Structure formats: structure tokens, C-alpha cells
Length: 397
Ligand code: PMP
Image (cartoon, rainbow, N blue to C red):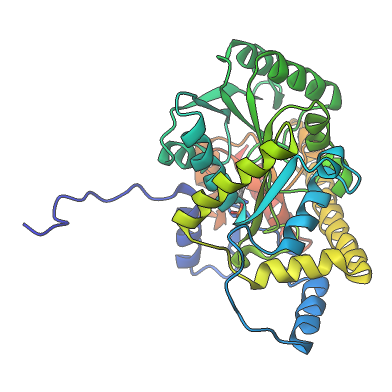
């Protein structure tokens, strides 16, 4: 027998599997709503103008590609902190926040998970039911036992907030609770400000460890508006972790630009935490790549590029909202007995559409691809494909 003869086939990634089936489909009118990517109205992944200008600027004075520090580019880490916590945040002024550049949001979650496993080996991790499909596997691969807390209520197509709060209150002290800071993936259902207040109070009262995952800052209501939750957690003085990603907000998916920030209780504590976090990075991949971090740092630190980015990000946010409204209005006309108003209330790239696995299967017969759970990527709708999508949905209802 060979060394690998007993190795079993791993289960297919449910979402990447959809893309494989989509790619194999020869129908030229095929539509992929299963993705987690923002497409523009022409159905293309945008290359943002601010990114192109930053790249041109960087090429005016090309620099050698030496290793970055373990924690990444200092200018990038600083820019991330200001974006995530707010430029005038006390946690920055008091040097209680530390940030390391990471390999996308996924990399940020993983180094956060590895770090936590070293120092809280007995804690369990709680993720929302449902959550981003990689959360569970990622924390399990760091050695944690992962539980769900109640989140989505299919009956109301909103958040089961009583269930969520009860779950938070029942968690043992020291439990790690992963919260989507905005644009909940996969449901599109976010908490209200008042609900966040209650969550923050429960996390604080229960001595829980909040791990905020912010992969879509700027896609719900605005950069500062979406960051407000992080700021409110930080204002409590609690220790906390925040992973963030620029994959979507800069359309830089393949450059793998993200970061992990940790807020400690004192600056002296932050220094020690950073030193340990650097060990985690060092033993995983040593240090992060240069290009994406430089591009993002350049955009964020150059006033005219930053303004351009904010406009381009607003453009993506507004287009998604327009697609939500268009979908609701068109479904009202095509499927009068069905209420899709909730699609307008949801935020971010995704919508739990309420379509069943069977209905998703029927859509696929029309070369329209969605996730079996009924999750559709609203950011993959456009003025050319929306009518076909709406007609197909109306037909399977
Ligand atoms: N967290 C959530 C909630 C996500 O939806 C995603 C995927 N976009 C990530 C983290 C990972 O981000 P990245 O693609 O930058 O690794």
C-alpha cells in the first residue's frame, strides 16, 4: 500500500462546487448567484480606479520586494486601525490596540484562532446559526470545539434575537463568541443598534471574548456606520479581537489583504500580546505579502485616492441596494402572492431568499445557480440578468 492509499476524498466545498458546475454549464445565459464576489452592472469583477491609481503611483518608484516585518507594513496596520476603530479612537491613542496584516480575512481569523487556542485552551467557540461556511472548520482546525448560537429565524426572515440573547447569557465565562460586525453572511440580516447594545451588555456581563469578523465594512450603510459596532465594543474597555478584510471593499480578492486587531486592557499588555501574535504568524507563514498591503495603505493615506475609494465603495453599496429594490418590485409584479419585502431590509452582498433546496434545484435547471440554503448573491444581479432571475424565481415558487 502506498503512503496515501488509505486517504479518503474530502467533501467538496459546497460553494466552490457551485462554481465548478456553473463553469461546466454550456448555456450562454447561465447566471451564478452562488458566489461571494461583487460584480458590477456589466457582470465583471471591478478593478477599482483607486487601486489602479495607487498601483501606478507605486510603480513610479518601484521598490525591492524585501520581507515585510512579521506584523506587516506599519503604514497598513495604522490605516487599518483608523478605519476599524475610528481615527480618534481612545484604544489607538492609549496604544491598547495592536494590528497585524493578515492573508485576507480568513488569515486574520486563523491567526486569531491559533493565538486564542494557546492562551484560552479550555474555551469553546460559538458561531451564529448559520454563519460563513468556513467559520466552523477554521476554528475546529485550530483545535476548538465549535457550537452554534441561535441567529436566523426562517419564519420571520429576520434575527431570532431572543434566542441569540438567551444563548449568549448561557455561555460559560471565557467563551469565544464570533459576531458578524455588519452584513451578516449568509443571511443578510443584521442586528439593530438597540440589539447590539444588549449583545454588548451580555458579552460584558458574561465575561465572554468577542471576536468581531468584519469582511464587508462599507457595504451596509457606510464605512463609519458599519464600523460603529466595533467602536461600541471598544468603548466598553473589554478585551476583543477584530478580523477585517479588504477583499470586497477594495475588490482585491486575490491579493489577500486583511488584518487582525486585538484590543488589550493596557498598552503594556498590548505589547505582550503582539509579541505572542507575531510568534503565531512566524510559525505559520513568517510574514505577509507586500503588494496588496501597499496598495491599500497608499489609497487610505492619499487624500484624493481615499476620496475616490469612498466614492467607488459607495457605488457598490448603492448598486446592491438598487438590485434589492428592483428584485422586490419585480417579484411583486411577477409573483403577487408572495412577500419579498425582506430582501430590501437585508444588507450586504447576500440574501437568504427563502428559496428551498428543491426550488434552488429547479433554478439550476434554468442555468441559474444559487446555494442550496437559498442564499443568493445580490451583488451578482445586474440590469441585464435580473429579469431572467425574477422570472425563474416566480416560476419555482
Ligand atoms: N468572514 C466572512 C463573514 C466572510 O464572508 C468572508 C469571505 N468573504 C471572510 C471572512 C473571508 O474573507 P477573505 O476572502 O478576505 O479571506
